[in-house]
Amino acid sequence: MRRPTLFGVPETPILAAPLVVRRAQVVVATASLQVRPDAPECGWVCWVATDRERRREGLARALVINLLAMARQAGCREVRLRTQADRLAAIQLYLQLGFEQPVPQ
Image 1: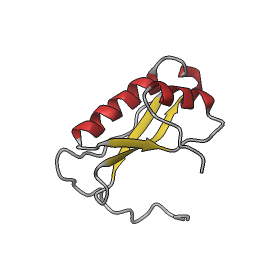
Image 2: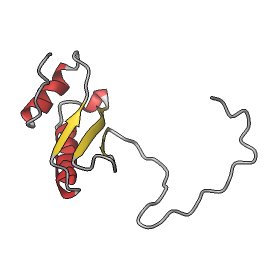
Image 3: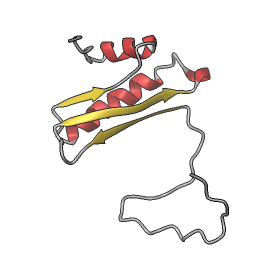
C-alpha cells in the first residue's frame, strides 16, 4: 500500500490510560508478548531481535525472561513461539529457558 501524500493526516487519537503514543528511540533489542482473548491460557513470544552489534550481551535473554513473567502475571499457563530452524543461537537460548522443540509427526 502507498499513501501518496501526507496532507490531511488525522489528529492522533487520545488513548485510554495508561496507553500513550511516543516517539521511538534507538532500539537495541526488542520482543513482544501476545495473549489472545480467545486463548488467554497461552501466550506467544514474538519479534525477538537484537541489533547485530549488541548480540551476546544477554539482551534477548533478559527480554524473554521478562515476557515469561508477564505471561504468568496475565494468567497464561504456557508460552509458545515460532522461530526459523537456522536461527541456532536463538534456539539454544529458548532451550535454555525451558522451551521444547516440537516432536516431528
